Length: 184
Image (tube, rainbow, N blue to C red; front, top):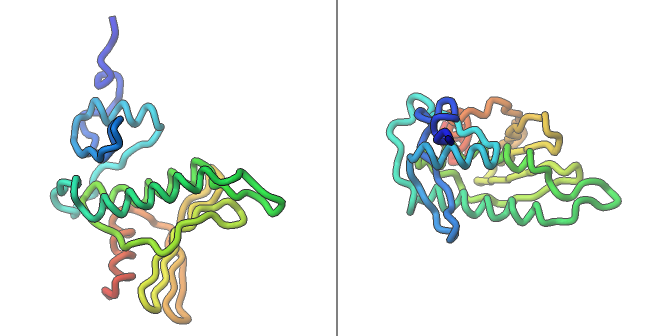
């Protein structure tokens, strides 16, 4: 006798709605916890719970947030098809670094919150994923190191002022994008 998947996954009833591509490649949004649980088990990705203060989740089928995330996801997939390394070091990012980029940005997409169009998505000479945004003098870069146990962070600058942001909760990421757009 098999146990339904939903009963085997702790917390399946409290998982947030998801955005996924079906077998035909179409974007799918929904809240079927059984399907979410299968995706989590298959991919090993833990989706975060919605943070307080974000308000109700928005439908995502036609949102700009989903479109930009899909473009970013395509760029990340193309990076993973690069040669593994050359004489200078890793060229292809690790699966863990690609997953960390998605883990930082996907909670925004889940809530229907857009992020700016990326200027560049690439891997550096150490195999870290670097996603770049720019708005006039403001520069923002999401860095996901190659090493499996290294945390992602933002590097940001405006003129001669710069810093690192290691707290990448959905709310702080949203605020950093607001800063990039010119909000104080």
